[in-house]
Each structure stands twice: as structure tokens, then as C-alpha cells.
Image 1 (cartoon, helix red, strand yellow):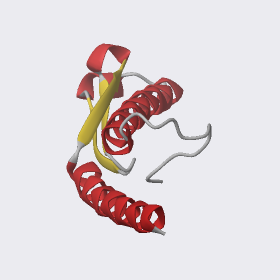
Image 2 (cartoon, rainbow, N blue to C red):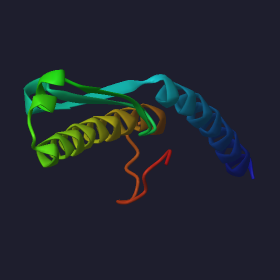
Image 3 (tube, rainbow, N blue to C red):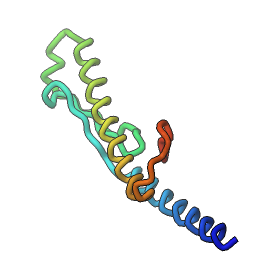
Image 4 (tube, helix red, strand yellow):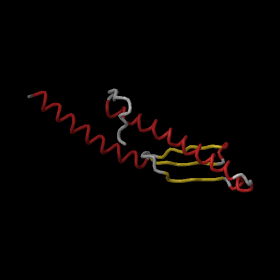
Length: 107
């Protein structure tokens, strides 16, 4: 029973750390760019878009599809950065504990 009590205490500590990490992720920002910086997308650590910047020079083109592709590419880069950041922060909490593949905390 002594081990069970210790394990429960550790679980409560980890839960507190997870709550703290949620707040950190909400404030963190990652930016992805495409088209050599013509388009940039900024996401918070939870993957919510916070900003979209488009260089006005691309509006002189009649190629709306290119602009759409640049936005998607910038978003995907920002999303990749968010995932890397989130994994890095999670590793700090779990102490390097390897979670099963597909077990994406805190999402």
C-alpha cells in the first residue's frame, strides 16, 4: 500500500504539471513561413491560429491558387513547430518517459 500512496502522489504532481503546461502552451507562439516569407502564419502552442500575414506584393498576381498554397504551406510549417514544441515541453514533464505512439498529450 505504501507504493500505491506514492504512485497516487506522483500522479497528482504530474496532473499539476500538465495543468501548468496547458497555460504555457496557450501563451507560446510558433510561426511558419512560405514563399520566402511572403506568407506567415502564427499559431499558439495549442495549434490555434493567432495571426496571418500576407505580403501585399502577391496580390498583384492573378494566381489566387498560389496564395492559397502559400497559406497552407505556412500553416503546416507552424503546426509542425507547435508539435515539436509541445513534445519538448511534454518530455520535461514526463522525465523522458516514452509514451505510446499516437498518445499525443495534451491534445
